[in-house]
Length: 251
Image (cartoon, rainbow, N blue to C red; front, top):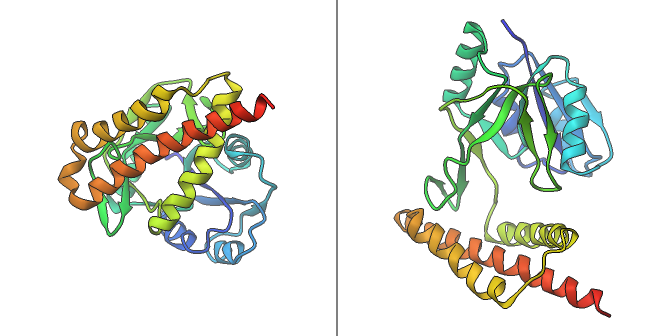
């Protein structure tokens, strides 16, 4: 039976990390790579594993490459500190490894808990992510906040949910939108993408329509409306910051 290393990267995650690590008590190893947290993250991690490494932050891709290489086993379950393995996902992975993995990597649906409810619409679910994989058959690639595992072999899907507690509240959501759009604008600028009036006016509206109507976010009631508006705001702010970068470059 294949052994599994659960790998988690952290930075100031004291509010989330115990929920995450307590859902991993069935794996063969838990490896935490922490970017020198200033809260109790490291202390709490050491309650669950003696494999806690400190490594300066180098960006999501490089940090996950570093962590994956230092795991004790080839099969990796990569999980973020604000995520949790559901009982159904746990049972499914255990059954898979008992019978023998038939793929090089596995995608799993990620379900978000937001404003007091689990979200299944608006484009937020199932949001499949490759999180279980054989590290010998693939690599981490991507840019800053859009890293992903690229498998060199067959990729299959499991049905159990990976639970995601992405935002504590509206303020936290807005703060993350502000941070992520700054990164996204820099990435677009690096690709010589320019922001037009179309991007600032039409793209945000298009995002709202897709989330609220096409992806049936309206069925999630008020929360679905909030998600659609936040998604539209994200798109608007991303291109607005790109426009600002363009203006600054002309000075």
